[in-house]
Each structure stands twice: as structure tokens, then as C-alpha cells.
Image 1 (cartoon, rainbow over the protein chains, first blue to last red):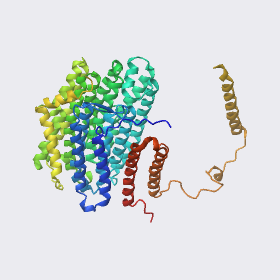
Image 2: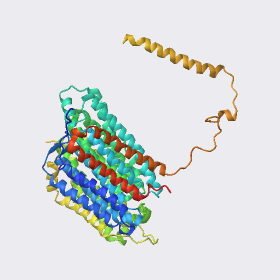
Image 3: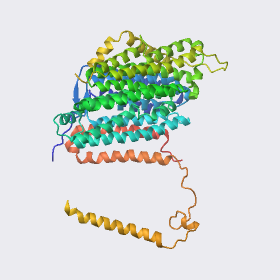
Image 4: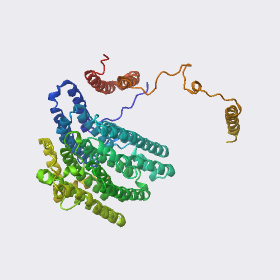
Length: 484
Length: 117
């Protein structure tokens, strides 16, 4: 009998993933074996898993290894993105604790789905083979479809889940077709081998171009780049607020990671072709996102368009194709996770039960009635605008610098104009909070819990500290940039 | 390439004949349309009710469970065939796989999916 070759397995490399998956399965079992009243600790079990995974990931810093027959890679780039995703997941769990209790949604599966989605992101981030990336993307997406429809008694939530699922499946098909064409052209799904066969010129160039275009469509959908953004406003508005916070941070970071790795490791020799695509994509994404956000009356929907606009800024880092652009994306993603989940935490607090209070009018006088929440929201909004000394400013500055260094002057000018446009809708919320007549309508009081306060403190810390003392994080991001 | 031309010719002729037959009977044949004739039918029966019916979600749950355990079996067969070659490594991997599915089974059991009332 022919001896089978067993692939090299390094359990240490996938340690964080194992922790996440085991915690998720444990949560499912705990869910069915605990009484309804005692389910409060499930969130903290999930949080424990996330913390353990973070410790293990942080421990892998500065350590590079290829594993599972070259399908899985651990490097600084992956560790950085994984920590960003874990930050997003951890903060989402903190925001969800009160929310799930108030909404009466049984929470074991909720946290299990969050952790499964995170493990999918990890495989996307660390995938050095198209198949691993696709598998990770599916694990992440399917968990997200279920999470988007988690408040199943609310019509909007159902709508969000269905729309996300149908369009997401279409995007997955595009991605898969792109992978198939690239496989057809190069004979491999491994990023390194695709890169080599492109450099030596043995690959069918036309097939590669079509394949790469389909990859842009597939990934562009997940990061909600215009013109593949149609799902984002409906899904962000309909999904439960903590899930929206989650969707706009971790999954986006993971998709950017896979996107960066595919284009910079497999297709770097085509950079002269693809920078133009990303230039146009970036300009369209930020412009459409910002202009559409101007006329929204629902805060969650406004934040969805703002999230699209931020994806446009991040895409600027793609055009450069050098280490500076990549490290700017890394830093921006970290900053964005901090500030965006903070904003959604405030939205969750203000929305109250059944998420009824999400329009701009519901924020009337918030700054006087709840001064601390008001100030928190203002700081986070300033960070989203990019006003110094917040982290948003440093993130934007850094990413604009990277584009400028490569000579994309017009791109930077358009981005700056866009930042100015975005001031309008972010400040509109602030004006509603502080400068409009107070309504006499008596609203139920806001429920603040220790976990929500912790989430807010973390996001405020991130949004201010990364703005005042960014150097150590920037050094970390530079060490993690994929390209030397 | 030239040896395929008869095949293409055959394809064209076959297509022309079948399309032509249907077209001819459609254009030349007599037509008597009445209500019962135009209704969709199965085994000659008039349909009793709309096909857009609600039915129990349990059908989906059973279908999902079937797929999961079906896939388990699909993985177990090749493992059984190459058991000797894979050795301890394969055994441990398979046990992990079965344990994960067992956890899923315990979950759906306790959730009451297996109670058929």
C-alpha cells in the first residue's frame, strides 16, 4: 500500500483558532445545560475565550511560520489583524451583555456565533492559499448572516439577514469564480506559487486579469466598496446594533487582510494594472458614502454610509502597493475598530428596548440629559471626522501621507474634500444633541451597565491615546506590514 | 476540427426538425382551449389547493440534521479505508471530528429538535 503523506501540523500556530472554536462549542453546550436565569455568565465565558486567544496571538508576535502544506501562515501581519479582530469581538461582547438581556434573546448561540465568525476571520487573515481564504470567508459570512437576523421577531432584522445572505452568496460565487480562473491560469491556488508563475510569465495573462477583477468584486462586496455596497445600509440598519458594530469592524478588517495578502503576495507584478482599479474604487467609495450619508435620518443608516466612506479611505492604501500603504491600512483599521464600536455602543444605549429610538430626533438634548454619554459620543464622532488630537486624525493623516508619497496628489485632494463633506453629517448629530429644543416627551431612562461602560472607556482610550501617542502603535503596524 | 463538421451538421438538422415539428403543430393544428385543459395537472387530477402552503419547520431541521450526519458518514468511509496508513494521527483527527459533531447532537437534542410530539 502506498504510504500517505500527512501534512505538517502545528497546533501552536492555530492555537488561538482552537481556543475560539472550543469556547464556541462549550458555549453551545452551556446554553442547553443552564437555566434561563443563570445565562448571564455566558457572555463572560465568551470574553474569557477572546482574552485567551488574544494572549496567544500577542505571544506570536515576531514569529513567522508556514504550515499545513503552505496553506496557513503565521506572521506579524496576521497577528496584527487578528488582534484587531479580537478587539472588535471583545468589545462587541461587552456591548451585547445588556442588549441581549433587554431584548430577551437567548444568548448562548449569540456568543457562539460571534466566536465562530471570529475563527473564520482568523483563517481568512492567515490564509496563504485561496482555498483557506475562501473557507474562512464562508465560516465568517454564514455566522454573520445568522447574527444579522438574530432578533427574529423584528421585521427589519429578518429583511437584513435575507438581503445579506442572498447578496453575500452572489459575492461568494464571484470570488470563487475568480479563484477558479486564477487556478486555471497558474495551476495553483497557493499565493506564493501564483506570484512566482506571474513573475516568470508562464501564466495566461488575460485569464489572470479576469480572475483578479472577479476577486475585486468578491472582496469589494465584503468591505462594502462602491459599487458593491448596496447591501450595507439595509443590513446595518436592520441588524441588531451590537451586531452592526461587529460587522463594521472585525469582518471588514479580515477581508482587508485577505484582500491585501492576495494582491500583494499573489499579484504584486500586476501592481501597474491594479492601482488604477483601486484608485477609482477608492474615489467612488468615499464620495458616494459621504454624499449619501448627508441625507439620512436614521443614525444607524448614517453610520452605515459613514462606514462605506471609511472603506474608501482605507482603499487609498491599496493604490500604493508599498509597505507604507499597508501599514497605514493596519493602523487605520485599529483606530476604526476602537472608535466605531464606541459609537455603536452609544447607539445601543440610546436605542433602548426593541431599538425604537435610532433617528436623529431621538438624540435631541442627549448632551444635557446625559452629559457623560453626550461627551463620549462627541469625542468618538470627532475621531470619525478626523479632528486632532483624536486617533481618527492620525489614521487619516498617515493613510493620506502614504498615497501622497506615491504621487497620487488628486486622490489625496479628493479624500480631503470628502473629509470636509463628512464633517457636516457627523456634526449634525452633535448639533441635535446640544443645540435643538428639548422635547417634553418622557423617554424611558437609559440603562448603563458596567460592561457597556467598560466598552465605552476602551473606545475612548483608543480614540484619544492613539491620537496623542500613536508612535508605538505605528511602529507595531510598520513591523506588521506585509511588504518589506 | 474538420471531423466535427458532420456532428455540427447533425446538431443543426436535429434542431431544425424538432423546432419545426413544434412550430408546425402550433401554427397549423386546430386549437380548443377550455378551462380544465389549461390547468396544471398531475395524473389527470384537478389540483386541490395552492402549492404555497405553510409546513412545519421540522422538515428543515430534519433535513439539516440529515446533511450533517450524512457528511459525517461520508468522511468516515475513506478514513476506514485508509485507517492503517493514517495510523494514530488519523484516529485522533477523526475522534476530534466526531466529538464536535457529538457536541452538536447534544445541543440539538437538548433544544428539542428530536421530539416529534
